[in-house]
Length: 154
Image (tube, rainbow, N blue to C red; front, side, top):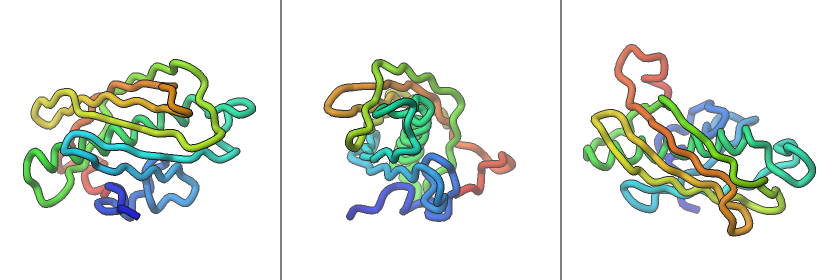
């Protein structure tokens, strides 16, 4: 099994969405497929329901947020030819829930960097289930500097 970005660069992270060390979290596994793109397959559990058979919209948002953030961090590291991945945080994100997301199998996330301005990266992502797009996200993620509370989080 290919190691995810999270397992490789932040194995002790406790983030609810993407932290490998958070036993009660979503523990997504983002896999880089290019310097500016990552994918993730994630399987919901019964406690992620919004209503019978459908994934909670807040969980959809958390999946898209964390996966997009990791795509941004990966891109900054690769484009700067850095040895370490930068700590990035969500500055803003907007999620459009296009249709209910079924929970009868894994969901698929795809995120791609669409713009970079210094330490600020804009990412567009989508969540699909059963081959249909159920949610889209556009977010801005920023590499933080020393002194920010998230600076040493990974």
